[in-house]
Length: 137
Image (cartoon, rainbow, N blue to C red):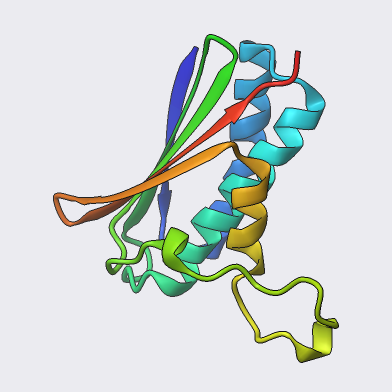
């Protein structure tokens, strides 16, 4: 099972994420627990592209491809933002009190924790982030 959706550089586009991921999960037989992780990951990463990728407002910002095969969910986010590998960002020290932690990085940290593998590449002027999650039985 596979599907995809495109997102413009506009925060209103984030409203498309919940129905897009929920419809996919229902068709692919993804559990509610795995759907929750999927929605967090897609929303966080698409939001980052829209907010920080420097894609002009209203232009195509990102494409999200979802696939389930052999019990593995693959999420591919291809964006036209400035070159940025979120996997290189150091994980925040979550043992520190919130007021002592620097701002930023927590969302990407959650995305890494909610998936089993992550890969980044820069191809044809686009950032390509591939995340995989082993689905619960």
